[in-house]
Image (cartoon, rainbow over all chains, first blue to last red; front, side):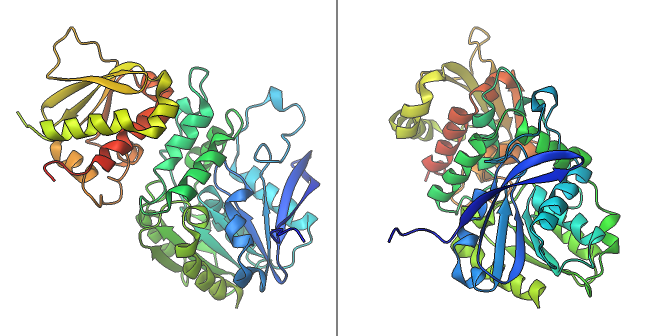
Length: 279
Length: 132
């Protein structure tokens, strides 16, 4: 028998904002649905360790998908006539479209970076329909990452985006893992990372929304790495201080990409957070 | 004028860059001159196909350097320390979060070479602290 991993990938077409999108979805495990949202300009491969962890998949049906334009998902029709520009509204619609198409009942929604941001909005707007959120590197407001060079004809976008994000890893995380994430970043299409950063740094501001999250209905666990300079620990502390009952944990010696840069060290934090939100 | 990080450190750094296997793979396109300014001490690094061919202390105006990085010695000292604190562990981190760390000149040329340049900056850290 081939030594296959338990992850199974498939394609599904969903309607997002009136447009058909063919998306790649991969999953592993059985139990409580756990939707995983990748970082800007990346794709669901970042969650391969989570989906290969039996301690998670024995309890959770882990579902990770590539956003439109990302990874193995197809860009929308006439993509060549529009700039990829993610917005809060579009991002939320995308998550809802996948969640509904797969018929996920009261999922836990976990995201990292821009995914860690949008889960706050998912909790604010849909707190009666989910068990809770796990926000990795979550901020309610994160200006400063957007710049024109991220999509520029005189610059190799893949190499710049990958290098620009490489330092967001902790210097202590294994080089092989940091380099793997570099590789994924180098593979995003022209302007895709910049379009995501447009959401993250220009469009996103949930400082008022998060005040409405009721943690007796929707549990909130927040995990942020000590070496994250995009979403600093102080930025997540502000989120935690605003949401009564939110649980925040600083991950020492960790960076911005815990699930891919250093899964062994991330794992205890993750299991603890999942226990918190799933009970 | 500050002598940080010192002649012996520069020698170790140049040796490491020029022997670095990754620079051997990605350095081919990096032919330029950039400056690093440690406090009030400015040095020009002349790079040809990813190899440092000379380090010029206090370069005069006839040394053309399209871009460079400047910071107080205390910032560089943190960057080069064995366990740099968060925000001082990477040059892109410092560009975003440490206001005293400044890119000078034509940043387009710097970012066209982002991969090799980033590797060279990381080799600075791997070279270790000065006078170690």
